[in-house]
Structure formats: structure tokens, C-alpha cells
Length: 227
Image (cartoon, rainbow, N blue to C red; front, side, top):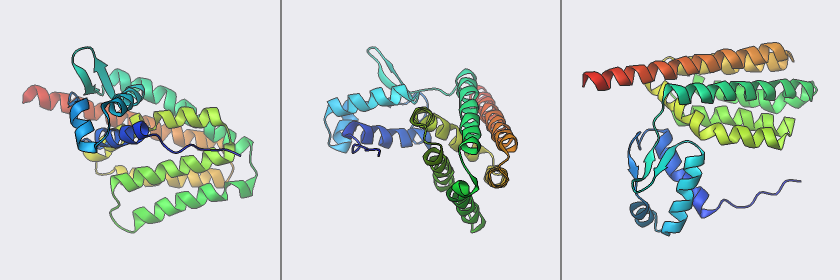
């Protein structure tokens, strides 16, 4: 049995600010002022300060002496470091998923993939709904594999990865269709219990996402130089 404590106030503040960073409402270099946030949310500065430390650990902000907290820059080095680890961890999750289950165990995961596919088929889903439903597929996998260390490590990467997903979808219209193809390939490989195909799909999509994010950073840098 696993008990989960209610989210602390600091965690709720961190999620609120983190979502603004992820979707681009708060942009790289923007200052996050403790006093202003405390007033807007009607919370103590101590709670905001703790929230900022959480966001720093998630690589969404940087805290500087005398300057305070600013939204972190997405750099090629940071993106490559993130995807190097994340792709490997997802591959580990996929292999364990096949190794520790029998056919019927994968039904909830495949059903979630089909739900995501149907949502995309029905019209123009928001980026947020696509990303949230994609992570729900991962949560189903966590429950099946039951490795709390792997789950916690992957969840700690979620804010930074979500930020790159939003960035890619914002710049490339074809990413919704590409995401749909990816999850269809996952469902097919899981149904066939083909761990090699499952890991290969994850690696290919991860490298595809990495390339898009790096290309976006190049485009934004070129635009900034020309502006």
C-alpha cells in the first residue's frame, strides 16, 4: 500500500509557476519576484521562497545572489543533457514493462494510448491535453512496473521535458500527427510484447524531439540576432 501526503502549499505554488514557464507565459530571463507572487497568490513569502527552490531543482529557474530568481534559459547543452538521460530511462521503463508482465497486464496502458489517439482524431486538441494524456500513459506504465525509484526519477524530469514538448509543438504544426504515430507504434509494440520495437520507438521519437527543440533554439537565436 502506498500513501501519498496532500501536496504542500509550496508544491502547489511551484506547479502554478512551473506551468507558466512550461507554456511560455514566463519566458527565459523573466524575473520572478517573491513579494509580487506572494501578494498575487495571497501566500507567505516563505512559501514562495520554498517553491522557487523546488523550481530550481527542476531546472525551470535559476536563483542568483542579489538578483533573485529568473526563468532559466534553454540551451543546447541543457537540452542534450536532458534527452540523453530521459531517453535511456524511458527505455529502461519499456524493457521492464515487458519483462515483468503478461499480456493482460498491458491492457490499461494500451487503452490509454487508444484514448489519446481518439482524442486527436476527434479534432484539434490543445497542446496541454495531448501532453497530459501522454504522461498518463507513462503513469499507467509506472503502476504496472512498480519501481518507485524509476518512477520518481522520471517524474522529476517531467517539468523540463514538458517545456521542450510545448516549445516543439509551438513551432512545428506537424508534431500532433507525429505524436499520434509515436503512441500508435507504442501500442502495437506493447500488444506484440516486442521490447526491442518498444525501445526503438521511444529512441526514435526522443531523438526526433531533441532535434526539433535544438532547431527551435537555433531559429530563436537567429531571430534575436536579426532583431
